[in-house]
Length: 248
Image (cartoon, rainbow, N blue to C red; front, side, top):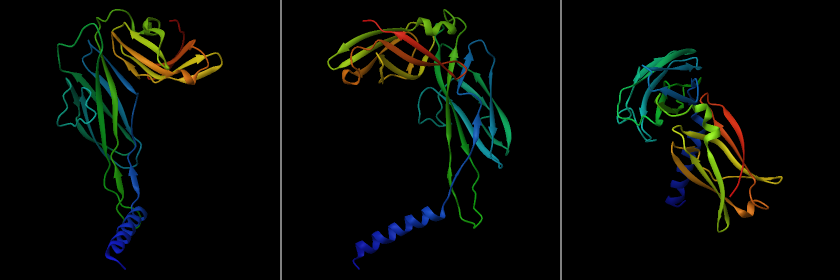
């Protein structure tokens, strides 16, 4: 048998053996809530974690300013996390405390940061003594730093958002504007034309005092869009459905 074929067969059989003998193990540390609102006048903010595994897990936490590849070593956000690393026992909970340590943020709008929670499960073996692959999940939650001096109430955000209809070439355009000091986050966006509907190519988040253009090909609808349907994420992590008439 040629050497290249023997090498290929060996490599394939090795991968097959690893697939059979190694089993994935994934930790199940759960965070209460899907976003964090940090009032600008708060001394600190608490967050609850629960370990649903019957065994302990090691957890590391840090805050970054938007770098998805951040680590605890290069975290650059003005927040302290206490404790930064801890062991959470099986079927138990742990409280994390966030404290803002910076200054100089805009007083008329929210600032966005991200809490990272990395779960490091212990090495495990199955009943036959074989090592398991260990998956280390990282939870990443948005932190909205909210100064008390923002004009208007956050509850009025849905009414304050502005949308208008336009077109360019073979696309319909939705111009979205957020004239408030609050972030607007969307879980879904689509347009309706008569009885037909089509999803939008939209940005999931509109920063304070910003605008964006969302597109949809004309071919997906029979006629001009008449209604914009949105699901706006609330402070509690739910979603509020909005039906907005569209006009040029």
